[in-house]
Image 1 (cartoon, rainbow, N blue to C red):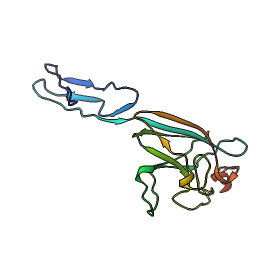
Image 2: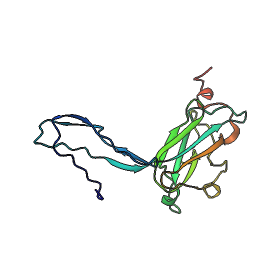
Image 3: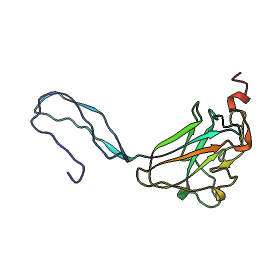
Image 4: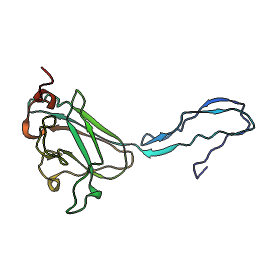
Length: 174
């Protein structure tokens, strides 16, 4: 109904698959199955619907090789307060091809950063940088995400032209 409630009456006792069909811009979290033990009883299957906006990009070095296992931070710009420390909405490591994707994002303004929250380390040897390759949040390109919008930012150069992955530098890979 208009409030999102649903009900099935007169169904026999059994295990049922339950799903919600939504537009591509939304995602539903729920049980997927429900067991009705007695036809005179009831069983509940609640779903939570969230926006399915996505931001993706690929991080590469100066030779266009993928930057694997780099921690990339997503910052919600409207939550940034002057004089307060930055915090990450989400942070994810790049995969073996240098790709990263944040799923199920709400419509907001975001910035992407490397080492904005902590200094460089052996595993994350990059200087602080923001998309599209600038050194301060003020210079960063805001990413305005609409409801269920999917934005692929293409490629971002690894900050500082390190040229190798963090694990390579730490001696983990040959």
